[in-house]
Image (tube, rainbow, N blue to C red; front, side, top):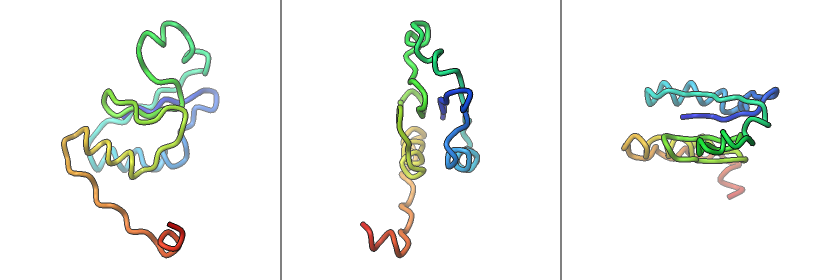
Length: 101
């Protein structure tokens, strides 16, 4: 799984920082964070690499999101699919989640 971030604020979204180690350990996969100045993502050389522009998340060769956020459930489902595993069990909604469908 690769996370593409912008510098100087190249810190991953807060929940990515929390879920990356957990998903990495759970599925025994490597997590890579790529952080560059925004201008480097816009060069011809970078476009030739056919990689997403930050912020983005890739699982294997698939660009999961580019320029937007992703839920842990969606990321985990794509990781499972990439590894040939069955999708994870959906998390049970709390009371407020059930009330505001």
